[in-house]
Image 1 (cartoon, each protein chain N blue to C red):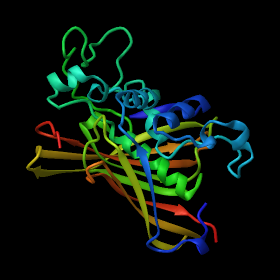
Image 2 (cartoon, helix red, strand yellow; image 1 turned 60 degrees about the horizontal axis):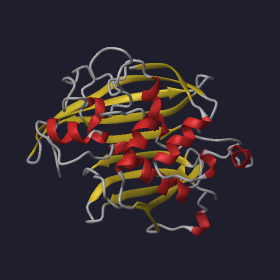
Image 3 (cartoon, one colour; image 1 turned 30 degrees about the vertical axis):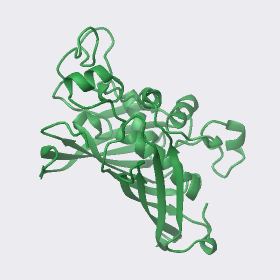
Image 4 (cartoon, chains in turn cyan, purple; image 1 turned 180 degrees about the horizontal axis):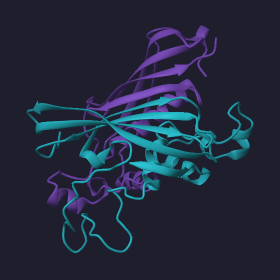
Length: 167
Length: 139
């Protein structure tokens, strides 16, 4: 997975912050944010996950005009999910999301233009009473800003389970 | 930002992250994050095809909610690291409480930082997220 242009926009940050219940004005109030040391609106800590919006091939978004979507329509399922993961941040595209780690090198600000490149990391297997055989796989995504500076390193661990897990 | 002379190992910060999680908030998160996996928003697919009792929250929604508690505590732009394991699923109707505990105050790259242990639990006191974070503090 590679993302050439992840435009970090204030309105997207506002919507993302709302969805995680964060009313902090640093995420939506430009006048407030300008007066802080950070000098402007910044992205919340897990915002990089929304780079999926900028991945043209992201598997967990219905494609415009064509290719079936596996969610319900007239029938309970439109299609079988594709085996090709290629997801952002190593999340649900690889099954369920088992772990997520972020390292922050520089604050991400509204107006930044990021690129992201993802490399596979380790993979391993484990037996579970609840879900059968578990296949874990790691992916490491590096986010760089318009000046080429590394801003975030994100490591996701996905897990494929043999059976549905209903805790 | 946390101040070195105002904190000590063992200090905790807790916050209720969400009460009675609504399906609509999960939809909000799907829209904002771009993760439209039907397991989170499509009850018919999730129960009839995938075999789960209902839709459930994105792990990253729980991590995001927990992140709100974390940045409220350590301040804006202070986080250096934040990592979690998703230990149990989060369902509509869940009430989540997040907790950060100071486990170490130390130096890193010439500045003072604090290491935190993170745990988010549901209304039955079951952990849904466990993790760690590191944040810069003021000296």
